[in-house]
Length: 349
Image 1 (cartoon, rainbow, N blue to C red):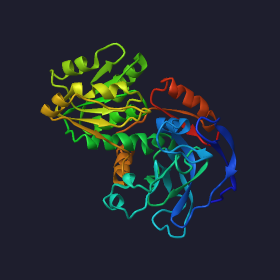
Image 2: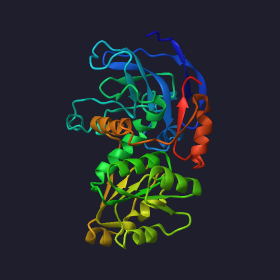
Image 3: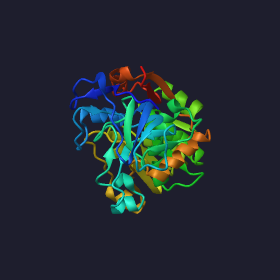
Image 4: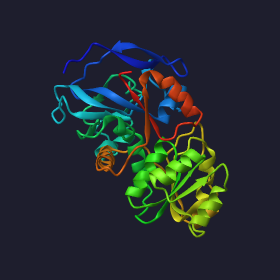
């Protein structure tokens, strides 16, 4: 395939600097890398955190963000044998890992201390051509629409992993905090596909309509109007949810989740509000045997499974398509909490 020498990308020099759409060189893949022509890229709250510098992890200077890029492989390195030009592939959060540390050898490559992070420590998918390590790029079956699958590459994989980490069983009840957002809208669907009963927690009539009538949650709790703990207990016969998945981008939900988690249940922390802490009273946490744990992004098998759910038609990621040039406006809407579902950007515009 013909590959240009220049491309358009959204770049910021350092945290909170203006995001500029400008021409940059197209990189050539190294021996173990592939070059993907990004057709569509999702916009994740992590991308906003990266731009603002919210986390205690330094971003690359002159960064091209993004880590939900779906496209077509246009060049491969000389050592790459299992993926070829013309294949569909995705640039996800884990851009590459060392392959030989104890975490990588155990299939926990997201925990690799030398992992490369797309749109954070290396350039990501807010450009027309992006590099990824061949072993770590997502394999996307042909026939799967690239705009619709883009949010699966981070949001889908992340929530699918969190649901697995909850260790809940089919038929049990999962409370999803932030159910109407980009992560939550997928979490509700994966939870339903995995056989869980879902209580969606968010605020606003638009998100209520989406969670109940589009995504398939059984119940909706509006945290701005109702006592979340009391309502969840009422729905579950006073026992609470078997697991609580925290996808919120504010700290408050992290302080109260154990109050409506069932005895011997699990609170899974996924959202990463800046400088937030989680707390719980020791006595009820101990005597009710509640587990509090974190869940990061999925590994390669989680990626394969999450995409397979989507390819089989079990997941329909609600999204709106915009232009790559509109990224600053999308960040503004995200900060204001005005996005239901996910924004996907067409990199050609």
